[in-house]
Image (cartoon, rainbow, N blue to C red; front, side, top):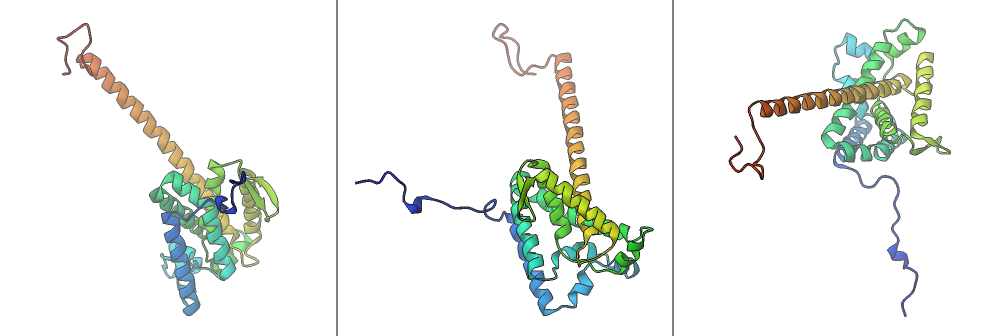
Length: 250
């Protein structure tokens, strides 16, 4: 006798957006490798971490890139990689790996540049920021989060893992927190200026990309109009007509 109810093996349980996509898989692997290397050689944090005084004074121009692959502890890298997986996988599937990697680095490096610029600001916190050391993928991850909210604005995200709010409002809240905290100066071991920079860089990059898409569409339409105009001018046709057997493609 056949049961009317499916067996337990028929059910599939899933959590999150699914398996790691190719680019995110590589990014996670590099971050884990750098974290393990930092445990063996802690001194590399001072060399590869972002310190505005070193970038400007010692021309450590690699730091705005390398800082985002270092982390200060197991929970630091765990939450960053978890957020990258949760919010980045759908973006990579939608954009493709190449554009996602470009966007990730734009957000991460843009976050570093924002930190550098703010370290020269005429405010009390700037001097502290100038000599502070920043590590972690949070700037790039914040950029990924902004892109996620832009494409999926009504998706619920748990604020403090408790309160579900739409993604667009979640980004507004964390952006406001980062701005106010950055103006208050470095504190609590959290690089608020870098978080803010990741949001700003991601927003500007996506806006410029949308603008370039519109320009490309206008150029395409104009070119198509010119081709059709030339066809009419020189009597060029894509095929013969039923009532004109002598007309051919020229």
